[in-house]
Length: 282
Image (cartoon, rainbow, N blue to C red; front, side, top):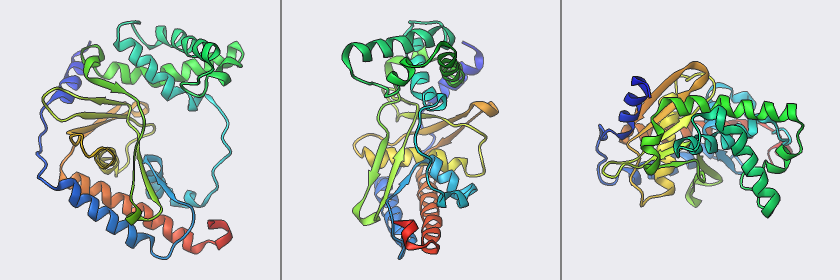
């Protein structure tokens, strides 16, 4: 491990720099619900699924929100995260020295398990099994490219006992908030025994001017989805393409900022929907 990875690991385990006052999440939830209701106004249409990509679209490319989604088809970019996370988990557990050595065996194990049981843990197993050697190598290379920065940033073997890699997305919705559903996805949750957990997110591209709210959004959705779990102390974001690591310490101000970012994004969508013909919105 390098000095930088040891320092980054110590940052994950550090005590929070901010204490959360009683009722913080309740107050932020009320602000969020009220803000969403005001932002939606008379707009109608399909439920709005809020995640980090949606927040970025609404802020940086709002015109793209009116475009229809492309029909889904498997491609290497859709495999890299789930396979990459399994690769990092296998390396953290000491089975392999690094992602390049792990990716082939990990992928083979997933495909073999699907062939034996019929159960698709990652959903892409049949697609990967049907690829030729060249196409398969592209998929594996994408996963290694994704996994390597995450693996190299922290001392995962020392954290493996307290870390959950991947797992189900955090989801929250409220009838009072109308047809708006929040989803948060993180790559790792580190749960030290004596402090609030830390979250780690891998983001592609470069951090924009709203990166603080985007990272805090992950802590907000996790807190809303699991009210019995301590609110994250911090969220660390990795932008591998830009070689940037940034972190947000979670306090009431950062949670409010995340809630307001959601409301702003919903307002942008509502304005677009009100301007479109009803047949397009439905």
